[in-house]
Length: 335
Ligand SMILES: NC(=O)c1ccc[n+]([C@@H]2O[C@H](COP(=O)([O-])OP(=O)(O)OC[C@H]3O[C@@H](n4cnc5c(N)ncnc54)[C@H](OP(=O)(O)O)[C@@H]3O)[C@@H](O)[C@H]2O)c1
Image (cartoon, rainbow, N blue to C red; front, side):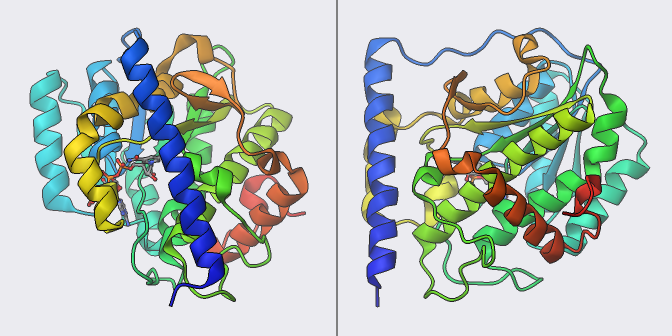
């Protein structure tokens, strides 16, 4: 039975979605969405999680077109190998690879990081993109609520494991970049840092998704502050793709999917349009040295005010380190 809390979360998530769709419709009717013009960057190496579908696939393809070496981190080898062949063919860039990474398994995330580092590639761009939305109740291999485990904690650990490589590859004039894909649903997310999976309440898919995205926003903001304080040549930014016509909606209410099928072409962004903000954050020269931004339609906007709460950020960070088995506060020291 839907609890009042779950009902509230559902209404809030749909209200945010409807507001974004309306804004997108107005923008499409007025000036549309424009692909950012970016210079070729053949010396850079990027990892895109969830690069096998939707926004991640479009991001990987666009970065490959810029000449970057692109490593797709995905949990479906057959699908990923097919995607790699397609991107190589379409972009004439052979430097596109697949490495297995199931974000629902911290063991798999650790293995992915080892596999990547063992290749000896530098790392300039990490796009934390993969995600699931409104999935039925379930646990990851490590027993975490699915949205929390896949969308947030897997990326939290992955970033930690790759931070050394990002730092080594960055320089003062050309910093490495961590791009984390958020969502407007974070504006209605609620998070208790002592219980970031909200284990004490009955499961609400809408609340769980919004919470995982709020966790990513808190994480990225704190990461940027710590990187800047230490003088690391790495920046961290958040991107909000808007509402995009992808398979992410496979678990949502059938009425929403009917709207997506019938009016997706008008109301939703295409996967390419949805990827442009990620690509912009990953490669735009004007963002050199710029971190801590929440980007939407290739421009800065403000995240939820609560996401700037440094105390909340720090408490979530400490708890996430504990849950992911990171003993030293991600190399920034334990508080
Ligand atoms: N679509 C939107 O309107 C929208 C709006 C705001 C934010 N976002 C965010 O954008 C990101 C991309 O979503 P999308 O719309 O492109 O969805 P999508 O088409 O469903 O793609 C999601 C990607 O994540 C991968 N993935 C899922 N679980 C994984 C796991 N356990 N390990 C590794 N990879 C996994 C999927 O792999 P498979 O190919 O194997 O399925 C797929 O490549 C997500 O973070 C989402 O929250 C999307």
